[in-house]
Amino acid sequence: MPLNPLRRTLANDIVVLAKENRTTPAVTLLIGVRAGAYYDVNGSEGTAALVARVLDRGTTSRSASDIADELDNRGAALSVVAGRHQLTVSATCLAEDFDTIFAMAADITQHPLFDEREVETRRAELLTAILQDEDDPGAVAVDLAMSRLYPHHPYGRRPRGSTESVSKITRDDLVDFHRLWFTPEGTTVVVVGDVDAEEVVHAASRAFGSWSQPRPVEPAVPSAAPHTERDLAVTPMMNKAQVDIAYALVGVRRADPDYYAAWVMNNALGQYALGGRLGDSIREKQGMAYYVYSSLDASLAEGPLMIRAGVSGNDVERTLSSIDQEVGHVRDGGLTEKEISESKRYLIGSIPRQLETNSGIAGFLLSAEFHALGADYDARLPGEIGAVSLDDAHRVAARLLDPGRAEIAVAGPWRRPAASEAVA
Figure 1: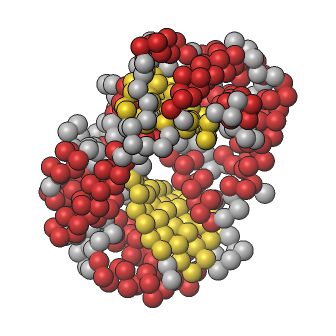
Figure 2 (figure 1 turned 180 degrees about the vertical axis):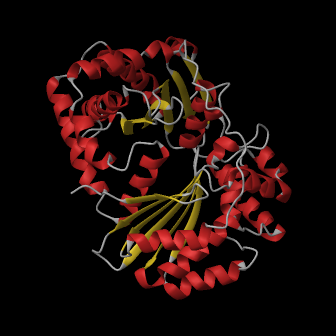
C-alpha cells in the first residue's frame, strides 16, 4: 500500500508532511533544515556540528534542565544531528504527548539560547569526538580519501571540523550560522504515527506560522571534478590491530538519470548477500578481510562510490590488487544477468522493511522531499529499480569504475615498502 502522505506548504514556505500510522500509540517527528556541514565557511569547519550539539541545550524560554526533565517525565527522546546538507531535529513520543513535544522541538529549532557555558561544554565533547576519529584508522582513511578525492570541493571537508577550526568557533559564530541558515524556506517538518494528519498541519501552523526569517542566496553546489589519476595515500598507525582501506571513486548525483543503474550495480559489486563480488572474492574465497563492502553516496553533487575494507597489515597489497581486479572486471562487463536480477529483488524487497517503523517512514519521506522525488516516490521506486537492465548496469560501471582513477587511503599498521609502488 502506498504511503500517500499529506503534504502542505505553510504561508512561510515550510513544507509539512504527515502520515498517519495507527499500529502503535507513538509518533516520530523530524524537522529537517538546510543547515548542514555544507554551509560551514572555509576555516570554520565544524560550525554546523557544534550548532547541532548546543541547539537543544536551552532556548529563550526553556532551560536545558527544563527540556531534559520534560523529555524524561514523558518518556520521550529528542536528538539533533548535522549531516552534509541538512541538520535534523528528531523526536519520538507517545501520541498523547505529541502537542507538547512538537512545540518543544519547534522552539528548539527556532529559538536556541546558545548559552556560553553550554557552548564550551559541547565544544569539549566535539573536540573529544574529533580526537577519537583521529585515532580510528577507519575514520582516518575515509577523511583522507575524501580530502584527496574532492580537493577543491566542500565534500572534501571534514563535517566535524578539526581541533584547530572547532577551537576557534565563537558563540557569535553559532548565532550567526543559525540566523543565516535556519529559515522557514528550506525547512521540512515530517510527522509519522498515531496522530491525525490535519492536526499535524494545525500544530505546525501554531508552532512555526510566525517564523519569518529570510534566507540568503543559496550557496551553489558545484559538480565534483573528475578524478583523473590513481593515488595512494598512507597514514601509518603502527599501534593499531588492523589496517583500514578506503578506495574511492567519484560517483553520481542523486538526480542523475543513471542513479538507479548505479545503485543496482553497486549492490552487485559490494553489498548483496555477504558483500557482492568484493565479499565473495576477498572475504569468502581468500579469507583476507575482516570486512569489505562498497557504498554509493549520491547527493546534490557527485558523492563518492567508496569501497571499505579492514585487513591485516600483511594483506594490504593483496587486498588492493583484488579490489582492482573485481572493479576492473565489473567495469569490463563482467556482471551477470543473475547478479543483476538478484540485486534488484533484494533492493525492492528491502523497501517494505525500511517502511515498517515510524522512524523509517519519516526518514524516507524527509529524504524524498529533500531530493524533490515526489510524494508518490515509494510507489514508483520498485519500478525504477526493476527497470534497470544488465546493459544499464554495464554502462554505468564503465562510466564510474576505473582503478586508474581511484583515490586510495590506507591507515593502520602498514608502511608502503618500495616494492609496493605498483599499487599506486
